[in-house]
Length: 87
Image (tube, one colour):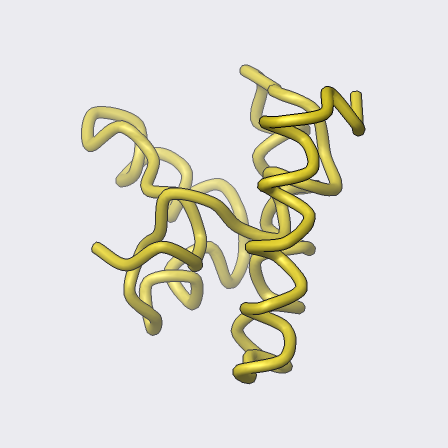
């Protein structure tokens, strides 16, 4: 597990999400992380629709991942944790 990447989902839900959401398995092409683009951009969600929305952010991260994007995510995460910025 790294610092930045798609946050791992609980194993008991993964197979169901792979079956119900197209391209869900693509998020597993990168190492999971403690923080990620979806965590910064989308609030906590417990439904399949929420998982589908978060997947859009995860796929954006997978497609555009770079040192600068990771650095941006880390800086924004620190802002949220230390200064209460965000949702």
